[in-house]
Image (cartoon, rainbow over all chains, first blue to last red; front, side, top):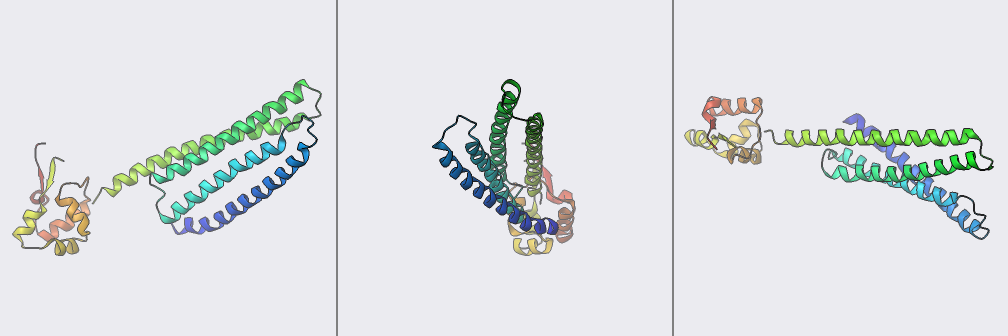
Amino acid sequence: MMKVDRIVTPLRLLLALLFAGLLAVQVLMVATFLHEAAQNDGSLPIPVLVVVGAACIQVIAFCTWRLLSMVRAGSIFTEDAFRWVDGILWALGAALVLWCGFAAVMGYLARFTDADIPPGVVLIIGILALAGVVVFLLVVVMRALLRQATTLRADMEGVI
Amino acid sequence: MAIVVRIDVELAKRKMGVGEFAERVGLTPANVAVLKNGRAKAIRFSTLEAICRVLECQPGDILEWVED
């Protein structure tokens, strides 16, 4: 338990940094969007995608922060933890849908139009989508493990 | 629960209070209450051993099976 406590603080620091960094990116993107709105050229609404995607990652960072609080308080194996894990899954799912849509559009543009998109970029976007699905399924597995541990803890608390 | 814990009988025989019993066994008074009113789901052998030592009895003296 001591070791976990030592990791929680730096991890929280990094999460706060990540959150602040994404916020800065969002502000930048909103400014870009307002600037570009005046000269709408019908291209992909990249700034909007970035703002929404960053919001998803911020939700994940916040939920992870709450879960870390529960780890520190020793209450991670309770029903309340599932609210935050579910929050992570929803945000991750939304980000994945967004990213896969982006990947599909990029793939379409590269394949069927004369847009100047190198095939390597499409491949990287596709691989990142695949990695996202892997992370999502891993979280689902960890959620099931948390369920097992929570049930076990509840059983053990009934032992006198 | 079809298994009944008969601590109060043994306590009465030895004229021991619940507070003293809890302290000597190393249980919280709350857990002793759980044992007494039959809400306990399970008991550790180490707890059972401590109870038997304090009450100078056998497990059979405090655990009883009754039909539901």
